[in-house]
Image: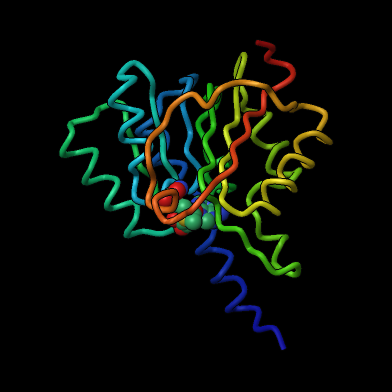
Length: 201
Ligand SMILES: C[S@@+](CC[C@H](N)C(=O)[O-])C[C@H]1O[C@@H](n2cnc3c(N)ncnc32)[C@H](O)[C@@H]1O
């Protein structure tokens, strides 16, 4: 049976975590910034290279695995990349905690966990609700770039995006190449770019 004290403590801890994240983001990302967001940034290879190539763009990598975020932060510090931040957070929590008016110019999802078993598909990051939440923060001309080595997930992602009223597949070359840890382990991969409809080209 549910223990009301333990449930209340659990909810208080979640609340505290969300408040801490909100404060951390407010201190790093000024309201109304336009950012490049990498979801599941892993060891940070992609975003560190991207931030070095585009010093005028604010780049934010988010991952739920703390030691991967620490590796990313070390890369950032070694390269002295003031336009790059790595945040230890779950992607949907991050979306809810973003400061007001912050929008995305682009979103990268590179080699997301594939969750191959059917009963686990609900854990995949690319879902209609996730696309709704990202669309709310999509700036003018925003693009979502998705890459995976797991073909069934690629097909599902293409279907979810095609069926979504606010996103459409864009026939565009991949904008920036940088080998990630999971890409280096893959024998092949599939990429797609989606354009936020309200943004236009
Ligand atoms: C297969 S790894 C790919 C890492 C990196 N993008 C690469 O290509 O090497 C997936 C990453 O997504 C992170 N991740 C999974 N679900 C997440 C979520 N809901 N929010 C944030 N990060 C997540 C995992 O911790 C892991 O680092």
